[in-house]
Image 1 (cartoon, rainbow, N blue to C red):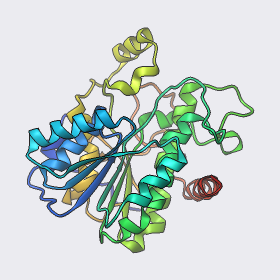
Image 2: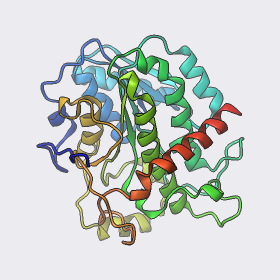
Image 3: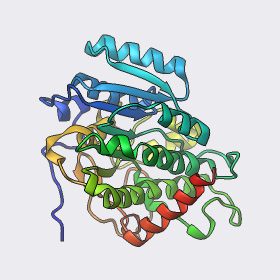
Image 4: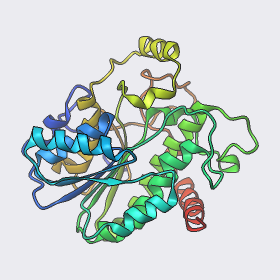
Length: 316
């Protein structure tokens, strides 16, 4: 049995706090969705350490504004912006083809939540396509760059919402069952954890560690698809207080750069510490349930998902 990882940091810790004293000069980091929400604060904290940071974004104008703000705030002039649309496999291929040199830190941060039923040109359900398949294609295509970095870290932003559904392999893309935006989101977040488990296993010999995390409840544009009244009610019903974006980014930054988790991989963190196992039978309610579902750490499911995902992105 592995020892559960704990740190001095908590749910109230901020990204700058967990990164204090860390020097990443000469290292290169990539943050998807780096122009909004906790992605901005993740990129900002990594820039403070002296790392070269690339914001991978759909909206280049927003990315440029964010990069300028981060440079002004941190003095780091090595903050770059690149176009990436995770729902477009051609965009992912173009991005990875253009990447040159090693990659020390990859933060799979971008995501969509509770979107109405939408399909990509491949027929994939949008949330699974964005949150999992787009990032899967990105990370696997960047594997040579990660391996070249000698000790690279991959950080995958999941959610406690994964407790609401395993990956339903028999009907991932809702071709048979009625579409539900929340279970679709949940299974995509379970897929994020399973990816971390399998990637860490497959890439360990290359010195790459991969972990997943729940950032906590933060009010960002991730909730843009939610009905305002539902969002207000869910926020009011929380048993845990909402986090600031700086606090929400803290666990991502910890896993990306802290020496406290050096060599740690294949795990799920929340509030800057490794999470315990949640009881799969307890009903999920945002902000009230902690831990990771056993099905999200299941090595057989992780391998099955990897093979399905690899086949999907190869065909497109």
